[in-house]
Every structure is written in C-alpha cells, then in structure tokens.
Image (tube, rainbow, N blue to C red; front, side, top):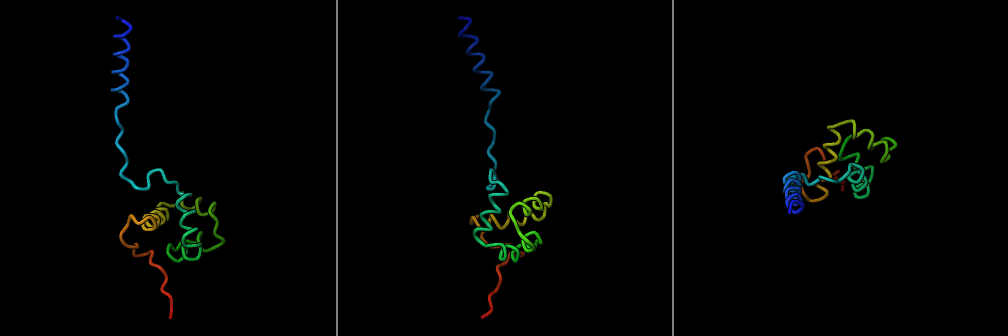
Length: 106
C-alpha cells in the first residue's frame, strides 16, 4: 500500500513539475538563420538578394559562411533578412518597403 501511495505522489509531483510550456507564436521559431539564408539565396540569387537588402556581404564576394558571420553580429541586418523570409513564406501580405524588387526597363 505504501508503494502505491509513493508512486501516486511521485506521479503527481511529476505532473506539477512538467506542466505545459506555452508554444511560441513566432512563425520563425525553430528555423535557423542558415536555413533562411540558404532558401533566400536559392530563391532570389545573390544579386537580387543584394538589391533587396543593401548589405555588402551580399554584394562583395558573397558566401553563406561570411554572411552568417555578419548577420549574427548585426541585429538590424538579421531583422531585414527575417522580414524578407517571412514575405518569401507568404506570412507577410506585401513586401517590406526597403525590400522592393528591381524594376525592369522596357
């Protein structure tokens, strides 16, 4: 009887200790910066990406490694990449103002 009571108490304590953790409302939760950048480069290419987000690491000898290094240190640049990625996924209704696509001359 004492064993069953102890098991019941331990189960109750585990239930209280491991209560539900609220889910994040951020749609980018769990998506790495490397994945975002790789998908954007595959979709737009380095030249178009450099036009959409004016950052030298996208226009001068671009690589995933050097861009990640810069984006991890620079919050404003990372925010622009995340905004473009949200637009790419269709989570934002229209493209952010500073990320407009290049106009093609006729």
